[in-house]
Amino acid sequence: MLALAFIRDHPELVRAGAARKGEPAPVDELLALDQERRRLVGEEEGLRAEQRQRSADVGRRARAGEPGAGTTELARLKSRVQALEARRQAVDAELDRLLLLVPNVPHPSVPDGAGDDDNVVVRTWGEPRRFDFTPRPHYELGERLGFFDFERAVKLAGSRFALLRGPGARLERALTSLMLDLATREHGYEEVAPPYMVHRACMVGTGNLPKFEADAFHVVEGDRFLIPTAEVPVTNLYRDEILDGDRLPIRHVAWTPCWRSEAGAPGLDTRGYIRLHQFSTVELVAFTRPERSLDELERLVGNAEAVLQALGLAYRVRLMCAGDMGFAQWKKYDLDVWAPGLDRFLEVSSCSCFADFQARRANIRFRPGPGERPQFVHTLNGSGLALPRTLDAVVETYQEADGSIVVPQVLRGYLHGEDRIG
RNA sequence: GGGGAGGUGGCUGAGUGGCCGAAAGCGCCCGCCUGCUAAGCGGGUGACGGGUGUCAAGCUCGUCCGAGGGUUCGAAUCCCUCCCUUCCCGCCA
Image 1: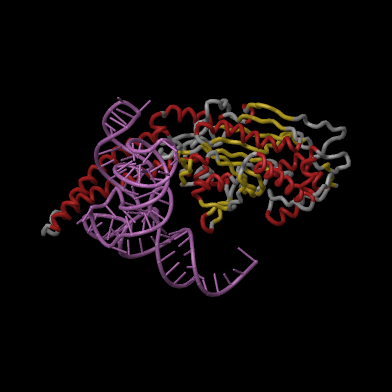
Image 2 (image 1 turned 120 degrees about the vertical axis):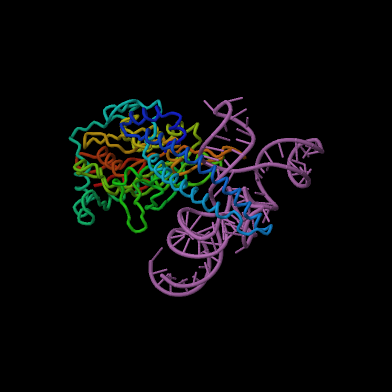
């Protein structure tokens, strides 16, 4: 969330930022409530100070042999304070509610735009492979090779669930290992294995709640949520903590399943291993000092790109325009891998910097130096990478005319030397 | 699931109705001392919000002792509910 003082001092910036994202922001209501609140606080605290003083006086007089003197007036004073307090609390609650609904303001380097067409391709890597036959989509290849079983997945859990078997399951596991090894051994991330369900407070901390409850799976028992991405548990690792400034930047990587209701995407990508209620990703998360978070974003994007490069997959990097960014993001890049069988790009990573937006919600701070005041960290995350679509791209890119798949060199070690599937 | 103990500042840990935002220690900051380092000595050191102020320092008021409610003129301290930690027993991968 944004600081109330920031909204008070720069309401026009907040309005403009929300407008660029195409999102509503209750700025006027917030300003009015803020004023009301400060009026009430002043009045309440004045009376409370008087109450305390007089109360101490009652104690002194009681010890001096005058028990009970002055207590009736105090009781009256107390009820006035309580009435004011109740009103102030109501205003506070509404203020808190509204603050959580104000979107983050995009960074100035973020281009204007309303949607997908306005995103800016900042670079491409690799050449899409040329085929002397018509490349098949991954779902045809995979079903023929027996590594997808979509029909039985539906029997188990319904549509938008997938079942990997045999070489498919092995290939995804190999990809997962490759990603984790790159992150931990070459890019300096500490691996974590977090819970797959979290408290409501964690979802609020990352900005998934309260606005987007419909996108998540809710576990009624314990009021928990299945994580939509490892971003949620990993970012919340340090919720309500004050980190030592020397520890920053902190970098974590986590492999987890992710669950999403995909409530807004009926009919979209229903075919294939693309858009699922459950899928897994290797997620990169970073915590930095404010002044170097944008550098960290570039680094993080590079770390995700390194996976695609290692696999020899053609991709593009796009800077998201304001209108295509999420509620909580400050600046965001997408990585799209080329899938020749589908003849389209697939988004395999979304790398975002949130500035202090999440850190404020989750109360994640650091002490810049000994004796200095705590400050909010900046948080970042990005997939490195989403497993299903990366697998799709590998399968489609390395297919042969006979329907077999050549295993990319970097994966062979993870597959005990296997160089071909099928 | 049953029973016991407990949750206090960056950390450890005292504190059972007013003199407690909270002893003491650690850590940290400033100064003294010191050839250097260490030790020693003295002082300082929470967060958040309001007011005031040169969007400064400072001053000032308030809130916060797991969370929420209650009793009381007055609560870290008493009562209730919840959450969490821990120990013993049971159960279980």
